[in-house]
Amino acid sequence: MLLHGLLWASWTDEYLRWDPSKYNNTKRIAIESWKIWQPALLLYNSARGNGWYLHMNGLPASVNNDGKVWASGSFSFHVTCLFDFTNYPYDEQECPIVIADWVYDLSKVNLSDPSGNGSSNKPRIKLSYDPLDSTNEKRQVAGCWEVKDTWRRQCYWGPTGCKDEPPDSQPEWFWSLIEFGVRIKRNVPYFGLTIIMPTMITCFLTLIVFWIDTMSLAIATAVMNILLQGLYSWEFIKNLPPGSGGVPKIVSFFGMNLSLTGIAFILHIIIAYLVHILPENLELPFQLLTGDSQDEECYQHDHQKQQQYENIIAMDQNPTFPSTTMVRAHLQPNANAATNGGENIALADKPDLSNAAYSQTRSHGESEITAGGHAQSALNGGAVELGHIAQQLYIVRRLIFFLFFFIYFISIPICLL
Picture 1 (cartoon, one colour):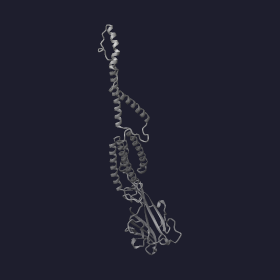
Picture 2 (tube, rainbow, N blue to C red):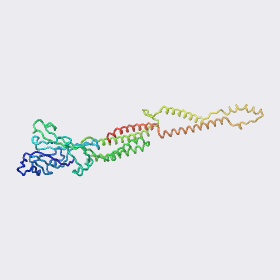
Picture 3 (tube, rainbow, N blue to C red):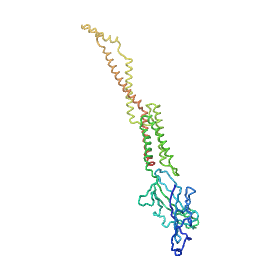
Picture 4 (tube, rainbow, N blue to C red):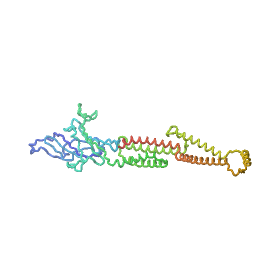
């Protein structure tokens, strides 16, 4: 992180004391900072080797007659920060600024503040265009970052680490350090429009595939969704800043979403293949359809009707009737009786009752066969349109849909919101 700032420091120089009465009652003077002694301050966590010294050369130093010196220096530091983008884009980062005297130990230079490390003595950060104008509201957002807080800490670094309490042992073994820090939060007002909305659209396309009845259209939608996610996620991940923490949650969600879409695509390929090669009346090893007993009874009833239709067709092809000789022998006495009675009744003039009865039975059977044939054709047509195995795989797709929906319901609030 590149920081620009102004550092104020004061110290006591016993070689810069004088009697004001001997010098025209002068109690304070201004002198160029490079002409007097100043601490050798440097930035301990500098990210560049050519910019770690802090020189008090911004303004002339002010010296009192008792040796009290005030000086200031401006700096532009590239500091090292431990950036963790796990919660991107809702991440908060902290950047410390560690300053110490690299020449003198604690026995000679002790960096401290008379005001202490209270909350009122924290570093001030001004982002307004006019830092001297106190009437306008101060800006808290710079680019895509918002300043949340600052801190200040003084510690003593030695063989056992950096401790806040003054050491009890020899001061020559310790160095005095001052740490300033800033806490910033990422500010992305268009994240919902540019990231969340396209991601939710891809999730919706993944789920809607399970509700598309046309298998070819479902597979084409899954392929389009995979291409869309691949191009969009690659462009997004390429623009992510490098970090030293864990994988961002949004990247993990992109990987999960692409994996689920790929799984949905493979499942629909397998289901389409099974529907094509498996028999329509195949039963899966587990029960999926409700009302299977009723379907079995309907199937047995239809099978009985089909058997009756086949018997009628067999009768039509080979009809069996009484022989003509038997009919004539049976009708001859009646004919003689009729002749004797004076009535001449010809058998040819009488309608053949047996033939009429057979014709009526045959026409009735044919009508039943025709009706049954239409019903059977309707049943067969429905089976071709959506067979028994297709219905079972249809329910399997619905069950997988609810599994995917549960996964999205859990992961979206964690990774995106």
